[in-house]
Length: 316
Image (cartoon, rainbow, N blue to C red; front, top):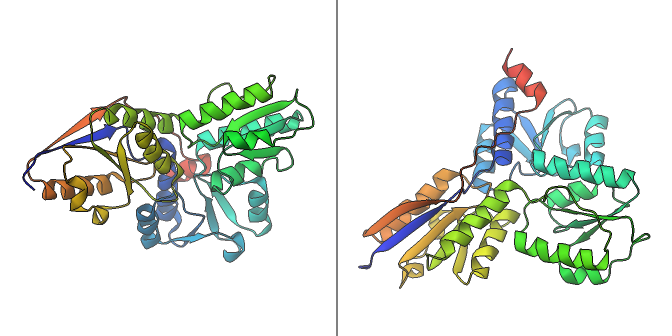
């Protein structure tokens, strides 16, 4: 290829504080106790991260009864229901919790609304593990909606006692539309004091919107089961820009670059930075005449502390 190529890297991108914390919990637990350490569900939705931890001795399971009694189990960043926590106790497992604190915040709100006998409308994808965990906090009081159309069929026992919560990784635009429809149907509906969509989801989407004005194609790095990654693709397309989700440099096709002069690159909250850099190097190899610049929307300085039990063990 003889044309030039400008590569614009969105920042922030990739790991958020919740993902960073979850991975660190697994790594530190392996350091302290040695393998095997069991993890319920993928710790975060990224195959590279999962494989790296698997090589260190992490064993990923979907069901707790596959874990030997007395073993250590870590709950993934997406959170689990109280029923799962109880099952872990009954099976004699030693549990460590890597749930993102922002997901825990949603769980706490669900408990509070349920205690006050509200019907809770949870905006999210019902098959996503985060939503399943939140529903488990009050299964008889939570109704899941994914689209505005879902709201038409909603029936609640008391229209004066309705509240809404959201999955943390949804598109801001999608959520705003659903919330507006809920407020129209239930004028007295209550919601969280602050949006449940996490700061990292918001920042990554806003950065994509900003770079979309300057590029011909957006590449979003992340796994197909990563909700926030899929939303980033949607956000780019909503800006009228071609967007593709890729997991690694191996998926890049030279023909994508035909007639393309500017490419934006971002990554979902569970995608490692070394994978992003490998993709950049591959693009540079296809078009040697290139420039790379970083577009910084905001700097993120959020750090979530490790669980107390792990911190105390590390300081011994």
